[in-house]
Image: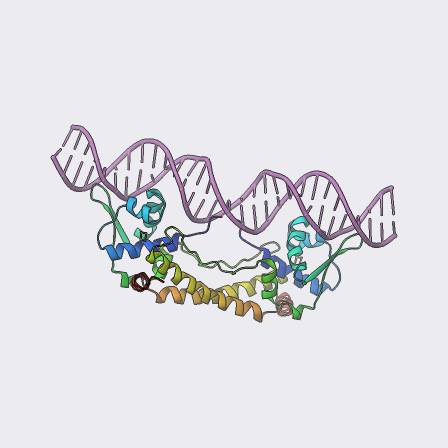
Length: 143
Length: 143
DNA sequence: CCTTTCCGCAACAATAAGAGTTACGCTATC
DNA sequence: GATAGCGTAACTCTTATTGTTGCGGAAAGG
Ligand code: FES
Ligand code: FES
C-alpha cells in the first residue's frame, strides 16, 4: 500500500490556511501538497462534512476554515478522516474457535488499545495553533 | 493492503508448539493457520534467523522451539519479523523545506513514538507462557 | 447570455506490501 | 531409491491510498 499521508497533509494545509487567513483554492492547496486539485477536494471534503472547513464554488470560491487554529485539534482532523480505531490491532482470523488464537489476539488487542489511548491523548492535546507556533519558531531558528 | 497478520499468526503457532512440546511440520502448522506450508516456512524462517525456532529437513524433520514459552516475549517475535519501528508515523514528504510540514510531521512523530513506547512495553511484558495460560483458562471457562 | 473560475463527482490506472500458490531442488530417513 | 521434510524463486491476488482525466454545475464578471 502507499502510506496514508492524509492526516499529515491536512495538518499541513490547515495550518497554512490559518496563517494566510483567507480563502484558498484547491489548485493552490494542491501545489502546497505537491499533488493535484482532485485529491485535495477529496480529502478536504471529509473535513467539510465534519465542520472543520467550508467550501464555496464558482468564481472567487475556495476553502476556508470555520474555526480558528486554536480550536481544532489533531484528533478532530483524524476523526474527520476515518471513523474507527486509528491503530488496528494485527489480529488473525484463521481459526476463530481456537483458544490459543483468541488469547493471542486478546493480548495484541489490549496492547494496541493502550497504545491508541496514548496516541489519542497526544492528538487531543495538540491544536493546530501549536503547530503553527512550532513552525514559526523552526523557520526563524533555521534548524 | 491485506492486514499484516504475521505477528498474531506466529504467536498462535508458537504457543501451540510449546504446548505440544515436540516437532511440528510446516504442513500441520499450515492447517493451524488455515494457509499453506510455503507461507509458514517464509514466516517461521524469520524467527529461525533470530534463534526462536529451529528447523530440520528430511524425513521426520520440522520446526521446534529453541526455548521454553516463558523465555519468549511478544516483543521478541515482533523484532524477529520486522526491524524498524512497529508503528510508522503517517508523515508527509510533499514539501520537505516547508516549516509547517516539518512541524506537523514532528507532532505526529512524537505522538507515535509515545504510542510505540507504550506498545513495546506491553509486548515486552508478555511472554508466550502467559498467552498459553490465558488460552487454557479461556478453554475451560468456555467464554 | 457567455466566459471564466471554482467545486463535485464518477471512473478509472498506479502503487505497495502481505498473502497465496506453483514449481523445483536438496536432504535425511527408511 | 522412494518418501517426507524444508528452502527458495517466481509468480498472482488483494486492498487502501494516491494519482489522473473528464464532465457537470454554480457563482461572478462582463
Ligand atoms: S507548502 Fe509552501 S510552505 Fe508549506
Ligand atoms: S489452530 Fe487448531 S487449535 Fe489453534
